[in-house]
Image 1 (cartoon, helix red, strand yellow):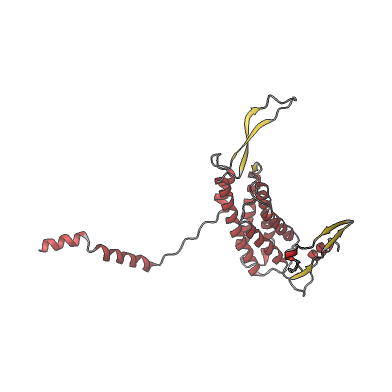
Image 2: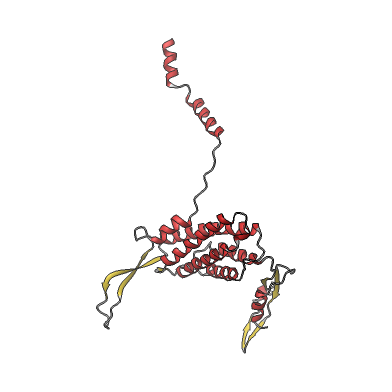
Length: 275
């Protein structure tokens, strides 16, 4: 079975067909003379191995939503520093291309301004994380982010986009931003994310006419007001909505306090004078 079949199926979008096509995997795969054994272990032979491929043209944005949702799920585990930068870049691309898809929304100006602000935020994070280092973590979330960015690039502003899909995408943006902010802060606290800083000193022991400037790796939260953390706190974390307080609750609370504390001091003095 040719591996290019999966690429053709992934690019194939025909209206009227189902959202997903389940393609069974063979036990062996021939890649130009290279034999790959895809047979499952003995204890997993009863399970069917399938590949889900998006086909429906009318549900083109569903592939992006699926990849973004997978990204959110895999962000339960901390990515390494390089994967975190890849996630920044993928969200920058998704936010940039999503602005062109909100023309069909009645509140397109508000959504476009919000998503454009998100695109600028991740552009700044990419620039400020150039010297970010760290090997603790995995790259599963970065792979989902790359899939979401690639699928968003394949969309056209003329595609049929429903309003609930845009609301779903906006909700995913909010949850992903909060998760990335929490991961960045956690990585700075446990010192799994490091920052490469240069030292005003040259290495005199090395040969050559050109001397490189020395550099060290310090924890991300050691530099005072690190730009990356400042941007995460100010632009990435959405403010918590204030819970409305009904007027009756304040009145009932004051009545409860009066019933517990008894009469006021002035009332007590007036009662003693009358006696």
